Image 1 (cartoon, rainbow, N blue to C red):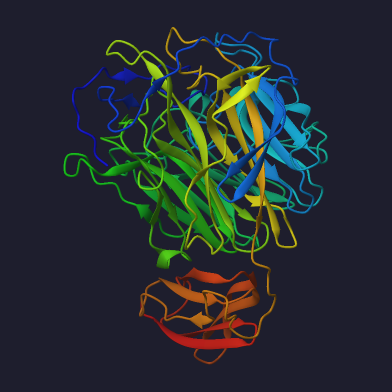
Image 2 (spheres, rainbow, N blue to C red):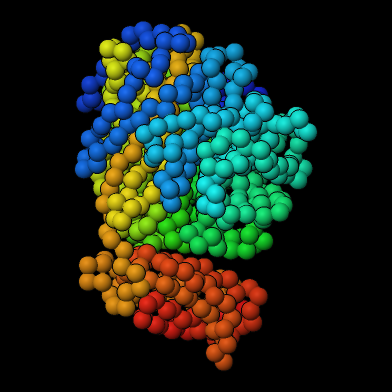
Length: 625
């Protein structure tokens, strides 16, 4: 909903450190006069000067929180940090082993406040019991060298965590993305280091940093990183193939964690979703793209445009994709979420205007983008963005899935009516944020209404203090036992709103902490290898005509699965000889889309055949070069 602009306040410029901190060299923060229509604004300007050593594990205990139909348990990790800017986008700070339920987490840690945090590192956290107990076995890198902005995943073979971050080693003091593998589940020793080196033509302060990470199998993984300065191709992807890195590949993506990489359930597809870098050469500011590879990065599909931003001059109400973005695979289908914020051009944004959370998957809503959260289902409160963390009234969505079934969990940060600071024309203030969650049990086709899962305030030794909840991570795969899935989330909680890293003078320093939230949800029991359509399923077995047809050289094939089945989709020539296999794995109920690239084939008529349980269907397509 559009708000009346009454006057223009000061333009706040980011000020940052040259050492790989927030993406501070680009964003201009634009605000209107502090005004909330039809909402009560409460100024909580009390002092909260918590000194080092004041907080102990006796001050906060686990508690239950009712969130709609879900009951969340909040577990403190008892790790506090003076460095409270956990991510420039949606963080990737939690991995759950779906076989054992063990949790592996990481956060940017420094016991100090201010002074550029020279001792900043990545603290590794481990929970052997699904979040009830948290241990701190070690730091990444194990040398203790200055590091930050971790991405966490893991290997199923031994349950060992894999953590990427930007740091340095004794062999090369330049800050860059390095990846570390633990020596076993929860050990925290991380003696194996992987160094992808530098993208071609990139050295020194322009190194690839701010990583994202996904494990392909027990021997390989993929990483994304970006440059510390702008550029036409500022986002890079590299794949470790089990023995060596293939080499960085450049994409026209933005920097500072505005991207996410994920791997399909059968490990045959690597997908990347990213926000455009907005350079003059590309003119893709505010846009969102998706690409994938089925051959370990040798070739990539054409860019699918998930969101196309229209420039402010022609359409001032158009929203731009800025910062928050996340992705997970459900089977072999990508599920992407991102926030949309009122923007102007590359480098400007309006954080106080209503924003939206978008969701896209080829198997949901006929492949059309859905707005799953906005001011219609989330209360709108003004965002006093004094710390200039590039937040908005609802933003930074994180998405995960159930290890079995087709359930999705989407969480994001949202403003509250509480703030701290001076909202006069010459002052600054920060808004307190809360955590919201919504769920889908049908591959993202329908979603529950967003509900708040974080508490407004917490008991600090008999004194209740407001809490600011930001930087939500949802594990990519939440464990399932029978039909019960345990949703696993970590969130940073702080008594001071906004990050101290970007906070203006006059605010109290604070110590933020990482908290685990988990809840159980029942998902439909799986029906394996069903031979008939399930009457209770919203889907049917079906194979649709490819589009476009005729085609040159790529086309899309859509099909549906009514119940969990072994599915194969194969291509044959007109003589019945098998050309290639596109799908050969177990699939959950849902609608699916796959791209077929026939660039290496000759013109002619081809057949494509879908087998799912006892369902068999064959159709023709024409390749015309």
